[in-house]
Length: 219
Image (cartoon, rainbow, N blue to C red; front, side, top):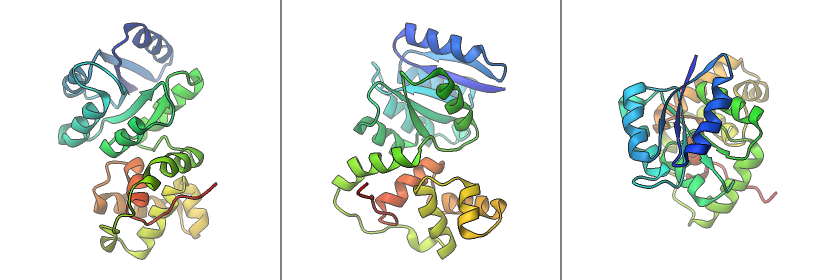
């Protein structure tokens, strides 16, 4: 059973999401929060698998709540998914940097929302290749090119794998590309995340671009 925490300051939106999620046999909404402060407290109380978190809320916004959840070792198994009305915006990028595992637009199709919750619960990033290119192209590319940091801790294989993750490849696709087994690909990804202190694949993607390991494509 996938345990979900809903975080949104609008009760009507929370009610709609709850009705949709609890209609599924494998998903349970364990708590609801109306602001980020409540979200952190309820995450500690219920230890959900997934926290669906709105960005703009009173008392504490979703980015700060995400940062606190990601920084708390007791909540290391909680996967934060940001909910936004705006699609790709700077709030989303900042939330990913804070530790979110991905994001969903609030008006997404119900089937896509349910699939997103299941993907997040597995620990996979909710970042398609197209979304990654646009996100990075719009925000990372605006920043001064940083000096690559931390790359020296990765082996050549791990660097290659991190770059492929940043291009949006799954473990199976990485395995096929590198002619290795999916298990080996998963091991390389896990080791790269551990060495870089990445909470999940989404943070590995952000690191790959910010460090200069991968550069934004023009199209």
